[in-house]
Image (cartoon, rainbow over all chains, first blue to last red; front, side, top):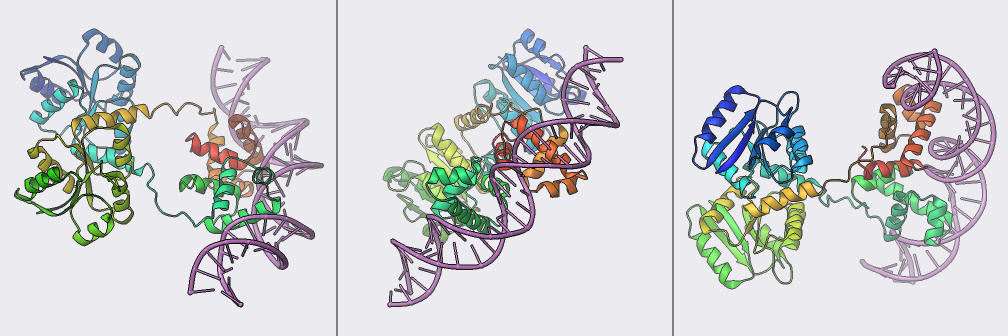
Length: 210
Length: 210
DNA sequence: GGGTATTTCACATTAATATGTGATTGGAGG
DNA sequence: CCTCCAATCACATATTAATGTGAAATACCC
């Protein structure tokens, strides 16, 4: 028997989900609430296996609710429930230890399957969510070309700039004259199409040159 | 008809998968290879919809193969295939733009389903992989804190610094005197514990202040 | 109502950076 | 062999940035 708590502000949907889940073999709805105002006490009191958590709720939304839960309880499985696969919310939810993320339009049979999967330690996601999650990984900087053809020595100088070194310090560090440092930096600026140290540093970070 | 290329070094498994997929309605194996030595040319020549890519292969492994593919081709779907849900490989694969990640022990029917899902833009993952992916998100936490208590105006100035603006330009942009800009920047340096523009910019990037 | 922090501005001085115009050396490649 | 280019160094000059010191208006908290 999988024990479930439900957080959902829409009364119709709350009723519908309760009836669906509570009416299915192997599932039991312990309680349902319209917001997360007392989530910590409620979770402690009912000790559920799985929490179905709507994202868009008044007062305390689902993400905040999740954070509150995870401050006290790392064990209970939290399955986020939402209308949109909104990038920001997905990321925030997963970052804060959600165990799954499914859309409300999920068909009932599939939803029960997802709850079971969450309860058994899986990570149920609807396909569109999974696609987004993967996209986040790959967007966490692809090589993205643009190496600007910096020479080895120039890369070295740029690295020092990023570390906040002055020309004088770089010269000392690299055992070359300060004018040579200037010369390198002039070249770097040309190649990066910038004309100040801080622009070069910013570009180095943005384009992952360093 | 979903066109598939297969990379798999084990001859038995390569044969088995070829027969399974090629023998199923709606699927076609264009070719299969035992390593990724010529992956770029092969992908170009056959132009598949989906690539099944084993991770553990001699000479050029699946991750390297994936990287090579993504250098030239962002469109083709790559479904990673592996025996173990090894943390490092999962992360490397997803980071480099894999479209899915499934275990070899996946039952045949499920595998075909995953291929279909990948072809249609989904992100098929076996449950254990999805669990790991979520764990990565929640573990990649923590690098937060440190907001350095910058005031609104100071954040604004820092943003301009990051954009490569000079004091003069910032003053014009914010409709304040250049001395006020100096004043703000001095304060920012104190709060960030730096003493140059480029250090501030670097810190802004590192600590995700901007 | 008095402490605290933010935002604003001013003047002065030193340090660092940006730009221009050279020159020399040594290696890679047609 | 000769050209191209990276890497080195030099000198000159203008602009920017960093630091110090001080001050006034506004807003917030207790």
